[in-house]
Image 1 (cartoon, helix red, strand yellow):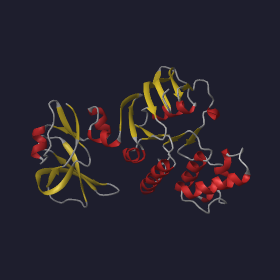
Image 2 (image 1 turned 120 degrees about the vertical axis):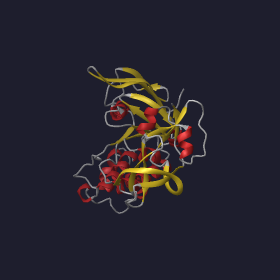
Image 3 (image 1 turned 30 degrees about the horizontal axis):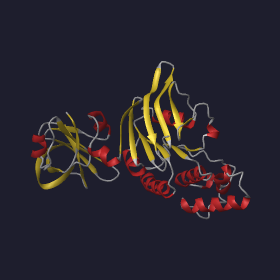
Image 4 (image 1 turned 180 degrees about the horizontal axis):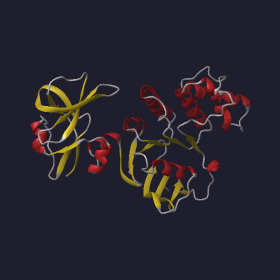
Length: 324
């Protein structure tokens, strides 16, 4: 018997459109797996199939080796957290969290609600209404409600995508802490690389319904399985050993490999290679300066301020090794 969730050759179709194409993936007890992909990649569709909200056209799902075929949503014992939280507006925060605890005595319900409010950092909020909460607070309540009945798995579908970037980063770290402290088994759907790397033990990259790679965040960043994966993860250029050495890289590529230049691969350095500035623009954290590499490809380097010179000096400090 294989413990936890097993997705085996899962295929989902909408008429002639194949939204998920023969995907196989396991989630072990206590593990958080992120489904990472762009819009239309099939990640939310796959999560909905695991929840029982979408039928499979092929393949199967099991939990601890037991098929989930025909098991209705409410009997799968999976918690669900969606982008909008879907709190009950007429109930207090405490009653929202206690919604799935109807079989417990009232004293145990109150104790469990208090425990979860402490866990998500909302002590003292039990009598407030959802309309009195910020977006981040509402998502914390939604997470607490999904955890309250101690489900065997939590399914989170883009839970932070509606929040502003600063708040999203803070809540991503909090969410990762909460899932680990509670040893929760989870699937986390996102299009955001940083969220996936922060929250998940392993990341599954999907594109147009196909599973391209499953790996730990560190392995995924440094050894993507293909150029397609590397490009989705942010590689802006793919360079040879010779070009990498021109940029001051001290590493060594294997035969048949090229180095994907990621957003963090280049740094400004007074002793670096001089490259032409092509364009620049502001990001929430810094200025993204686009430069022309020695082989003519474009790549970006971060700068604390806009540059005024026609060229800058950069050094290559990392990258993603992929097959040429």
